[in-house]
Image (cartoon, rainbow, N blue to C red):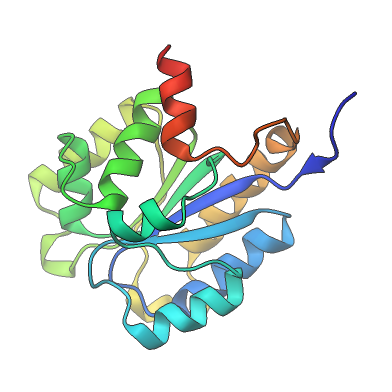
Length: 195
């Protein structure tokens, strides 16, 4: 007997964004019936921002492996990286795994989960050849890359709308029936897929 359909799960990876910048994007994803879990790179979101995002998503903001071990994330149906810093893009493109956010992105890339990225490098680094090459590398792997999010366009930035449109397109394919053991951790699911 099929289970009751569950909301698809979106892991939102953030680096250096103000909670107020993320709230409209999170709300738009929630309006599309996604359950959003925020994963922060180390020290990217201050304590007040973490509290604000936790209140909005009804889930704690994750930023390190210890919290993840105590309170496991549900398996993701998709990932959004918004905003994506210069460092995160470059490390991810070369498979570096030095924090929880990168580990989850590398695992998602390895198993082919849908990922959308809103690049937001410092303006002086946006044209760096390595950054551009690494965005192309991510695209080659099937990652959807929007245009850069400009800090001056926080109220209505085109890249955030583009990312929301990508999530909207995924929504019709992401509704899945709840399965026995649906509370497995992300790592457990990957281990099962790997055999």
